[in-house]
Length: 510
Ligand SMILES: [Mn+2]
Image (cartoon, rainbow, N blue to C red; front, side):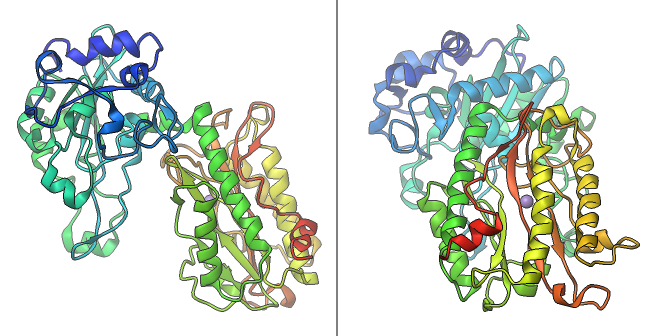
């Protein structure tokens, strides 16, 4: 990135740099390629703007994702994705640039479309780091972000799929390179299909490259690694950069993403409200099968305002709840058992995470009531500790939860000697949430939680069918989980619409 000052810089400094909305939102129009005009594979701004392009209202064009001009029912003017403004995206890039050493860049890639089988594919899910920095929601794109010469602002290069009428008939609209500049505020853009010739120039003089692209895939199974191997990937991209210059970006991205902005918390609150409401609505109905309850929740999350589910729902009747990640959801719901539901929706790229447990027939038995109340007491107390003033970390919350659960369970007749609590409560009390359900993976559980951190509080008790435990509790599973935004003095529960008091649960069927 040593070659001069890219053109978008002037434009963005004028418009974004003065804390004003970006160009398209100033004029409710966007400079875009007229359909008859030729494209170059790598725009260098000035020329394109003055000669080849003229102003067209964005509402008359098609993009690879909803924009306020084309989908005013989903986005407000100024927003690049629902709830997040173009200004906030620019600020995120500036914050990233300021964390990078001078002369270094971050290189972040869009996710790929994942094939399901043959020509069927899964719903596209953008890479969260890439989405966080760009707001650009298409596959096959690459972002290069660095400090500008002043050190106060950033440079942003965004390479995307060029518009292609033939391909768009099959795969839907693309935003194209001109929108990368005019809508997404890139300083430089280019056709991603030419990236092999573009990158050597862009990365030629940089001192370090912060990226995750060259890391082995952590999601690969043991069998996959055995069959196909996982050496640090040697690719054309990796070949391009002196390996000593490659640094991990994960830590820096976690630092940025761990603290949520007011706009991010608003989105998580909306996702939590819609999802919590769906739980309470489901509670009104007597379901006899896991699958029907699962389908009802998926529908209500979306009809209450979410875009989609946040993760595969767990709808587990009776002993199925002892499987923490049970997602088959194909069993019968029995009247004398409880059902454990870990399910929620996401909105504008931000997730909610909720678990509720209730009796299938709407009325707690004596044993169900005792176990449920024990978990609820712990859950409520731990939620109240989610504030900066309490100087908590996720690990501290966990050990407090373990002790408190021990007391509660002893009280209702459990033998809690030895490591009983680790058998009955085998998972952690909390994880960070945000764009991912388990957000900012690798961010320390020992970090003191502060205003802006968003986390779950989810104690659970799972009683194995073992003589060691009181008979009337065996095969029962109770987990109660809320999503919480940590406040300085008090927490904001993001999912309070999902009722959890025994009286409220029983009251829903009366
Ligand atoms: Mn969770």
